[in-house]
Amino acid sequence: MLTQLSIKNYALINELKIDFSSGLSIITGETGAGKSILLGALGLVLGNRADSSTLKDNSKKCIVEAKVSIANYNLREFFEEVDLDYEDHTIIRREILPSGKSRAFVNDTPVNLSILNDLRSNLIDVHSQHQTLSLSDTNFQFSVIDALAKNASKIESYKKGLIKLKNLKKQLEDLKTSQREANQQHDYNLHLFNELNDANLEIDEQEILEEKLEKLNNIEDIKIILSEALEISINEEIGLQTLLNTLENRLSKISSFSKEYKDLSDRITSVKIELDDIVSELEDENENVEFNPNEAEELNDRLQLIYNLQKKHYVNSNKELLEILEELSNKIIAVESSEEVINQKESEIKEVEQKLNDLAEKISKARQKVIPSLQSALQSLLSDLGMQNARFSIKVNLKDSYFSNGKDELQFLFSANKGGSFGELKKVASGGELSRIMLAIKKILSENISLPTIIFDEIDTGVSGEISNKIATIMQQMSKQMQVITITHLPQIAAKGNNHYNVYKEDINNTTTTNLRLLNPDERIVEIAEMLSGKEFSETAITHAKELLN
Image (cartoon, rainbow, N blue to C red; front, side, top):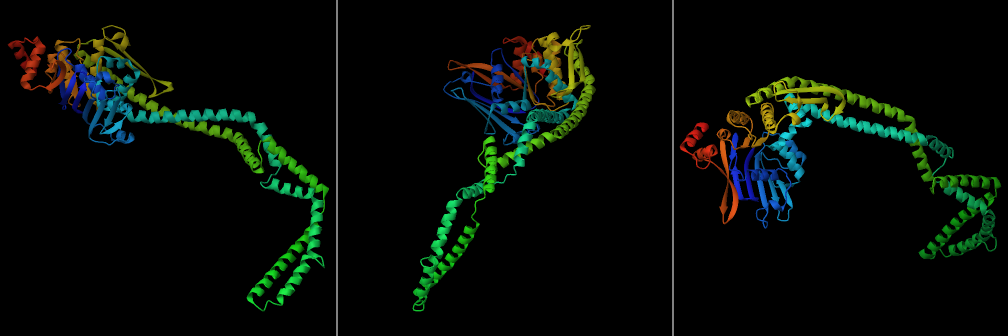
């Protein structure tokens, strides 16, 4: 519920703050007084786009602030989703800077316009002549039927299921595309896999083979050098072993004279032991060195196979070849098991489709159940509003296709004249008739679901007399369940309000400004008298105004 609206530096308004209450509030004023300015300011705070042309004083910013009571609107979850602090009494503020840039805040937290627009549908419904065009929109027509049918939770489940179905179908198509592409490469991949698999590659094999081949290719030099090393080590006269033995014997004779000599002697002994070990290995290596032409050929062949495979796959190591082998294995397995995966995905799709079909059937049955009462209620209300011959033909037909809100195709037809044929609303109903149809729909909705504040902008255009009384009565009845604010030129409607506000212009310092004030009982009598007979109203007009108010 809108509890307060404050406006600064907007259009013809310098500064205005007005409180609103529950029930039916009436706004009246002369043509051009600024009623549309109020709606424009309210539109700003609800997310309409704006620029610096809306500023009264281009050197100052424009501020529009709305306080709304939202305790009964079940919006806590929405506030959590958009990361806003929830308050039962929420403040929405919009600022338009002289540069034309704008800022928006909800409970002092900056927000973008999309959040304001999402909030708008839950807070305030501004009904104007333009909005009647939505009567011909199938989505709006469905929303009316579904509200009465209490289909909200079923449609929410259906929408989630529809998203899941679309995702599954996309996954299935991707799987089939991948399968087609994989099948085209399957034989070649299998050939590559077998070639690599038959090679029995090992990660470090290349380095080991290259080392062995290098040894074989230099076998003569190795044999000579090993022989020379042995000669240097074991020669009886000048060999390293002989010299170390002599050195060890010399030092052992003085090792007992000091710790230093003993350490030197021990170190020489350690060197002698190490040299003996080296000599033993040199002898083993020298004995084992022999050239095997068959082994060299085998090594060459094996290395050439590895080099060829690396060149073929544009890699430089066996590790990379083994990684390619694993990739090929996965591709082959994927092709061989793809049919099973596709079948499983198709089963999932059928299961989701069955659940969707069941939901769609329940949604459709609920719609069919409420349509007769909706038609009857609309025709009854419209008869009271001077459209005695108004008739509706509303039908839903369950189709095979999946739509965004079920599987129904909707036919929402109207006839305004007795014996007239049914047709689409936008083709057979006049502007005045559309306004009354919309009012009737809002009245029916208000009795079945919790609606936000509704503002009627001159819904009474083109009607008078008893019809205006009926319109006023309907709005009065609606205001028992919700806050209703109406802008009107008709005294019959103005007199039905719980609160009456007057929009007026005044000149201050040679500048025209627009203001809004809440009328007290005496001012209200005068205002309605003026609406009855103009500025120069008579005592009769006063009497008539009092009668209307009573």
